[in-house]
Image (cartoon, rainbow, N blue to C red; front, side, top):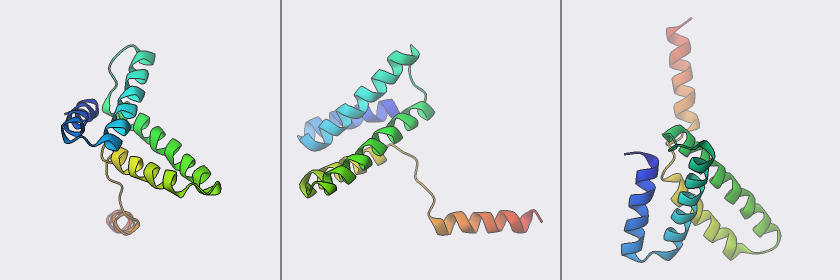
Length: 111
């Protein structure tokens, strides 16, 4: 299942559950994906979809900083929730320990 399909499915689930904050975030993600498709003139690949979602996460991280500078903790917290929703569609990142272990194993196998 592609990322676009997963977003569509999550929108349907959020609609049924009447989870309005999640639904709004997913609709914004879908709009960003549709915009990218219009630019390219074809459906986006998963790699392109990941790039679009990462860009959306980055925008929200910048917004959190601005909200906190202006004392809007409530807006910062809701934006953090949006980031959590978007991160569901991104590949999991390796922790620092896992990355170090893999590098050490590679270096040990290839002196």
